[in-house]
Image (cartoon, rainbow over all chains, first blue to last red; front, side, top):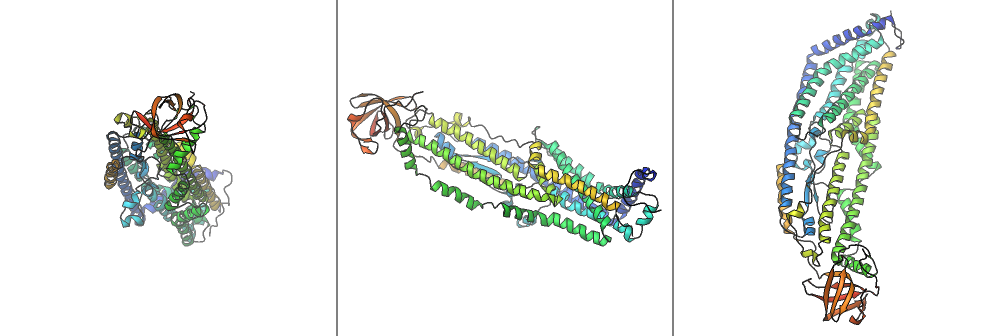
Length: 486
Length: 107
């Protein structure tokens, strides 16, 4: 009896599909498990993931503690700097540190490549400084094994090794037709093969998730409001969906390929393209579509514009002339011309920096979106974008921190310059204040955005991943329903 | 990362070496003349404070960019007064004025 092609309506045979699929899955899983090569590969992968999680969590908690200590020390330095002019205090400046996200231990994302603190000062807005990669040893530049890269790069390779022969192998050995002749429907066959691949995978995924969860909870930040659980669940979901997509792709290719050798070649090519070709290609394409200035070009553009501004003496003269011409009619403007000129200069500089930074961030955001668009042709790209977003380590989170630092700087300058302007002293630049004023500038307290925000920002990637899951499942169903048996 | 913390703290401690970016120049104050008594001029600053400055023989008078004269000063006139180091009693080094007689701080 040769089962008909296609996955038609439910037949009496299909009623046995569940147990038959399970029997087939157990048989396949047992065979895979008995294969010493799989046990070695799975054991090695589990070891790598555990090591990556342990190393990542240890490193993350150490860095987080150092950032917290540095932020506290910096606050003490700010408060204890003694008496000085309020505007001099603005020049004295303050450092604010980017809080280390708990799940950066799982996916450090861009964290090694972006600065960890921002120096806030009068007249000048800066990008974050000190990128951790600068401290790295030369070997670190070859790449770092992280739990995210293990889940998104190594795990799919294991999936490929488990699925490439699912149908093609049976066909090569001539057992596919007899298998269906036993009365097994194609749908049951597909379910059995999928489960047969997933069960051995569970031997890696379940302990890895347990180890990861245990480490993350053990080293969780003291802050009870840290959105760690929802983000961790979302992260796990991304890795699970990505794995399921690869299972679907593996079964699809295996069902369609001429031989298991051909299936392996196709799947390895897909895996290699997703893991190693598409990320740099997408990055290059994004930069080509929306070129961004280098750090030197960015600074030069700001300086060029500042160079076209009036000199300090011209600015002071301008304030005097405007006053004599009738401006400042109904304001409580400072009576000292230079204080007025200083406030206007600060306002113009803040506006200039805000505009240039906004342009730069918009450009980076467009690049990021371009990269995301390519997730539609490479599921691993979409999964990478979501993984970093849920871990709080992508470019969008970095920009959110930069915005918070910029707003804090504006508030700090408003407090300090406002004190200078409102001092009521003719000689405002000799006016000094102490700790009571420094305390009016609150400590920098940055809360990263919620998971919902991250999901909204990366909605395209989420939709792309969902679409890939649908395509992989549909592809597997269609391939198995129409596959040849000999 | 420890180097990072030390570097930041070292930077923090170095910054106070830069005392102020705007060292004291001559102080120029904006206000409107409220009364004149010989060489003593009372004016209300844009902050709403009353202050008195003295016109000395070395005081330069300017009407806009032109040379001016003390006799042209009138109550209600907007002036920018260079009061030197700002130490009281204030002596004007230069008085720049407009012919406008509007009040500088209608509040």
